[in-house]
Structure formats: structure tokens, C-alpha cells
Image 1 (cartoon, helix red, strand yellow):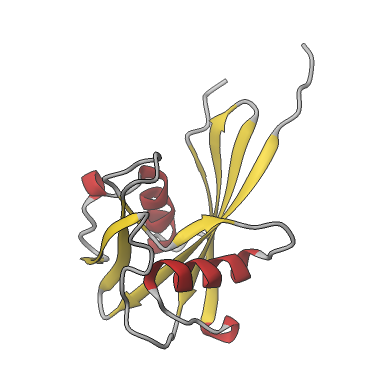
Image 2 (cartoon, rainbow, N blue to C red; image 1 turned 90 degrees about the horizontal axis):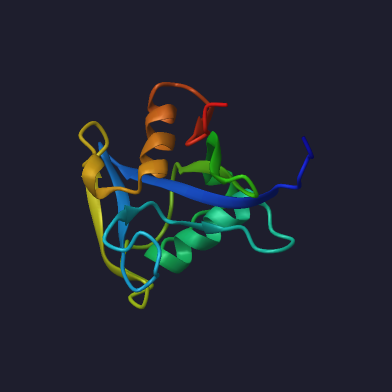
Length: 150
């Protein structure tokens, strides 16, 4: 059996909540899981840390400014896509922010929406993000998603 190489792609997510609600964007025109709701999130850019990426994506997608000291790391998920493509998903929570949430990326998102954290619409959310949110809500800080049984 030969050992191949795997590429791990970093992605960052921000849980923005008020009261008992979480903020999501409806993906449209992206070519990936359009019609599903996503947390403010995206790939980590070259020479960018996970926290900085989550903060940047929150500003770009929902127009909120979050200071690094107002974020809290909450969860990491190791996600299998295929044998050569693996994702490392790191979730943060915005404990405070400035601004009013808006759809700041209308070219990629149809709307923003708040959903009750204790009654998330599983059929409308990106499945791997839902798994990460559920892991966080269970008090875990690490999880694995979609790994094949070998």
C-alpha cells in the first residue's frame, strides 16, 4: 500500500449570536451548496491566522466589526472530503461586535437570517457546519465529519 499526500484546507467560521439566535447568510451564486444557510465563514487566506480569517469573513459577509479580544475559540472540526482533500474547520464565537448585520455580499448571498440556537433548521443549513455547531453546543471542542469507515 502506497502512502499518498493529503492537502488540508483551512477554513474559519464565526458564531454571531444575540439572545438565543445565531446569524446566517443564505448562499446563492457561489456554485457550492447554494440554497443553504451558512455561518459567516470562508477559507483562510495565505499568511492569515484562523481568528483573523473569521473576523475578516464576518465583516465581508455581514458587515460586523469584531475585535480579536471579543472572539472566543469554540470548536475545531476535521472534515473529510476525499482522500486528497481534507478540511480543518475552526469555529469562533463573537462575544461582542459593532455595526448592524446586513447582507454585505449580495453577489454571493441572498439574505441574512437569525435562527434559534436551540431549534436550528437542519434541512436548511450546511450539514458540516451544523455538525460543528452541535459539537460546540454539546460542550465539545473537537469533532470529525464525514470520515469513511475503513
